[in-house]
Length: 319
Image (tube, rainbow, N blue to C red; front, side, top):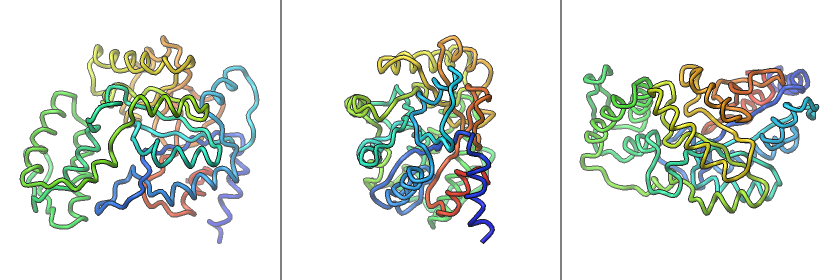
């Protein structure tokens, strides 16, 4: 009972803070292996209806402009964001956002938009989902052997490999990914679930942008973790993605790929400031004060099968 009432109390206590909600994909089907960053449609629908009822949902660009100009914001201001630019943002999320008249910002990996390529974390997930290999020895990568005979085993192995690859510099990550892909691809059959990870086309972006409801921000070109890149690659990833997104209007917005504290550094911030980007978003959990560093804004990441009471507590700042 105490926890049930806690979100009401903390929503009031934190009413002057900004809640930036982070989504990725919205599913209209069910996959045999749950994917943290793909949210079932029914869960997403309930969550944004809850946000509409208890929060003032505003476009991120408008929030940042008001902060820059020293203007006040409504109590319990919330912002809805999506990372990566998955096709289902257009086919599943956008119609519902339009029905409820809720604005959102989608951060896209510009080099993949309009292509048939998958982002490497999505491709890795599909490799584990579709593999027919019942065991994998990852000792060559500093990990252990995993049984892939069950969905639980696949999930455990996928999470271990995913986290390991995130720690590697670009060349080593690509080489390791290629070796693991070769092992997992042996005898694998396509399931069709890869459609869930297809990316937007630029035509989709145009339609949503012209609606006036959806803004777009840069998320690098190829979704590589910035702190793992050399100076030139980091510079190109930020500047080229921002240049492409700038075609959709001034006041650029940016989100760091993966977005943990260790995934970006001062090199990135310097370039973003030079480009006069309004803000850059992390995946560090928390609410935001108006006085906080706009190049290190926190978000509330929402994943698969989060209980409703947990979502309420998350948005209110309890967690």
